[in-house]
Image 1 (tube, rainbow, N blue to C red):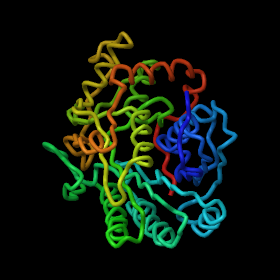
Image 2 (image 1 turned 90 degrees about the vertical axis):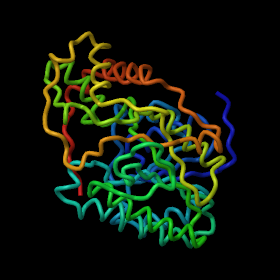
Image 3 (image 1 turned 120 degrees about the vertical axis):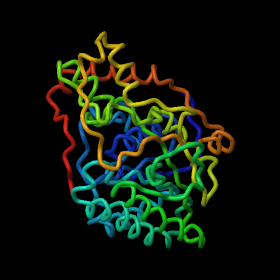
Image 4 (image 1 turned 120 degrees about the horizontal axis):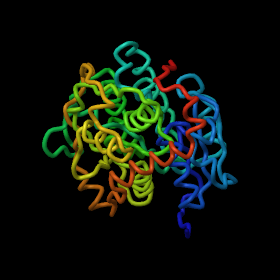
Length: 335
């Protein structure tokens, strides 16, 4: 595929994350830019890092922690001078945020305050793209646009909202070239195995019962990671500083409906493979946000249907089953 892009260097913070690693893969495929990856943990195996199956001659990785290595990170940026920094780094799990909320606020609020305060003096930085979450809005009913008020329901969402508000202060006063994104429920191959879509597939293959919180009534707007990567690149190319852009499909599905579709694709009866368990604390009933702004201003729209996307994840798990079945299936918290 022909590559065209006029940015010389892009840094991706949170490069080991599901979304961050896919975005690096997308940049290496679609652009000629040099790409810098930064993550607090060492690089994972190719099982969870799609870019490892590509030519990585234009990619370099640095192990640095947003909370503990900020001066090292700034020295790296000052030496490399990336025109664009995209930040996927976050404590992102919702349920565990109730147990140690200070860990979530340390990264998602204080870590962001520290990072942004230092970036605002960097003349080489043309764009700081911050990956936020629609969970800052709480339950999304009706048409939720980018100017919707914050109404978080969990410590995770509150920590993201706090960090976002500080970034808006800097942007409003022309101190940071901020563009912010909020995407609904992102999924795809290489995702963490404890997430509902890969976990459902794995449990079916292992003959285990799938715990369905609240009977799976919550509505989610599932969107494939490749569509998110496409939108994020379009933001770099066409986005306006100071703006927020939503990425989402036009309608959502209940969690139950997604599990039912997976069961059908895998030849299983839904009632035979699930067990109903209590709803998660603070679970928002619905995530449906309006993405008409991104569609109009960026020329973006999702291309991968839910059925194509689910087939994509099933194929990834089947192709890598011998390795996947040895992996832990529960979330492991790192402070």
